[in-house]
Length: 169
Image 1 (cartoon, helix red, strand yellow):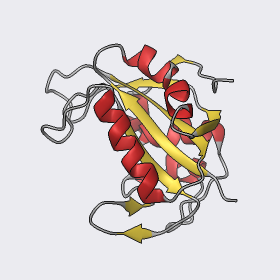
Image 2 (cartoon, rainbow, N blue to C red):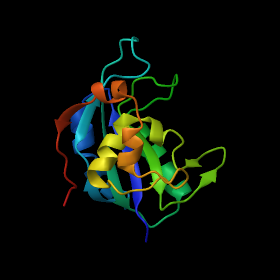
Image 3 (tube, rainbow, N blue to C red):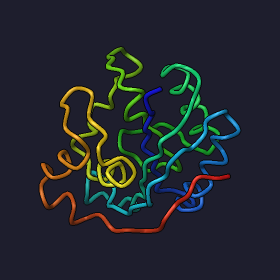
């Protein structure tokens, strides 16, 4: 079965603790983390609004349901951990995005696969390249390293290594 990759992020409450414990939280929902990138710190976007920095990473997961089921679990998990959707790009205690669901290409009102901004985000591509450098975007066919190399240097300059993660046993 093809892999599933998800982006994880947080910039409220205790983001480091939240993300380091996330594999245990997901395991309770029958989502198994196979591989975990390091956590990377980067400024909240858009810059200049005074929001706290984000911590971001990527997981490769195993999940037996469909992409829509995974999305609903993610939304429920975000809500349980205190996320209240207000304005776009607002601070949040947890953000979970499906980057690639087994190579599925899909656009509907609730879910777009692969995630539409994957190839534009250093905070996704850098951790993705860590755990899956040969992953190929289902539409552009660029692998993670090729997509990362196409980003402007300014996108990489803001990234700072925070800590290693490992999946929960």
